[in-house]
Image (tube, rainbow over all chains, first blue to last red; front, top):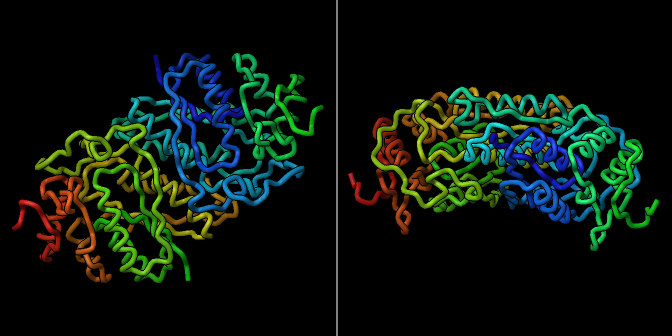
Length: 230
Length: 230
């Protein structure tokens, strides 16, 4: 059984990646990060998704991205609400965490090497997204080229494949694909600014993209929102 | 004053990088990692070097590379001693830490972005080295291309420059260059398997490369060795 490291945040995209990896017959090694995010409740969601898909191992890595600050997701500055999500790359919001995907992929790469695994899944997408530079297809392609040279696998002529199967899909398409793969989206979490009881704010970028996605997919949104019941 | 993030392990190479960055007029932001290495005494050396060069800030990032194991540097398996150091890329030793430089550079990239800094120094070299894949020039070049696409700087058309000024130098040349830049090598540490009092073993790859380097450079080695006094 081929192994795959799947980056699992606990949101819609990474849960769908998990579903795809399972559908494709991989033994799943899920990796999540405690990086000082204010929405650490997403780690509970990651745990639920990992359990649901019976992953071989779920590794939660502690890293301190707060050390260098620079994002409203890892600081006490307010999360922007009710703004228009343009999805244009020139418009990078406050919630962007510098080099986050680069850091996450680097840990995945190290783990993959130890596991003797040549497949890494990441749920980035460049359609319904927040304009983060490290979600773009050209970034993923450049990362894969670099990864090939960074590891023992590359030296031995065996490259690491970086799977980003959601890259060209919009959120509604991802939701439909996830449902086909048996994802239970009630286990997932998206909100950047949840209430203490875990309910989503409904108004941050992530909630807005999620809500619109379910609406466009014609699928009932199982999320418990605070103040946005409809 | 231009800023530079300098990866600082506390060894000969990174201390020389610090010296070069200072010579070239950069304001230095030094970054070190506590990654579960058994030779954590190198962090004390990094602190001494940072202080010596009056860096603007010295950030020590806690990361857990032990989480996925795979190296004698982060586990309890013995460090290899007295082996021939071939420096050929096909011959990767047990002390190789999977994806270590990839992980380190990713943190440096994130910090650089927050600091509004476009220069990162790393002391890798591909001559007197242990055959690690992530020390090769083609890795550094691929990392720089990826970094350009990963960040705000890249989106804004301003790339991040990855400086690896020691890439083509042997250890003796690095030591001579360091001395020209005013590096005090008595502050540095190289040994993978030091005694509790910090003295170097003299027999691991890193000690052997260091000793040979000072010898070839015709410079007195200020290291305190245990059992290798000569």
